[in-house]
Length: 103
Image (spheres, rainbow, N blue to C red):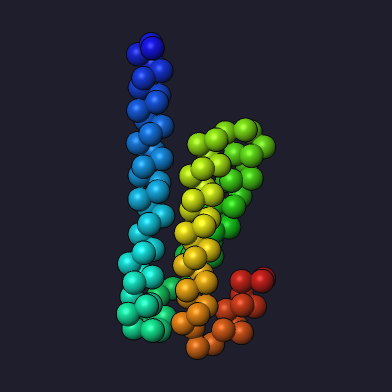
């Protein structure tokens, strides 16, 4: 394997690892929502925008046939969707949040 290929592979692996770690930062919010059984002090918009971003990049990865983009963003989309579902479960005012999500 040539030096450029090894460096590219290492950089790609590091990017995947750090991106997945970034998506997992919502786990602390998830834990807080489960512990307090409320969504006080947890913002909804970051979950929604990150989920839309993941779905967009996953679509781009599908068009380009890039397995790394598809894998990373599919994982992020699953996590963000889970965060949104937990948020909706503990949100006392579900109707406005659902309307915001639909919009």
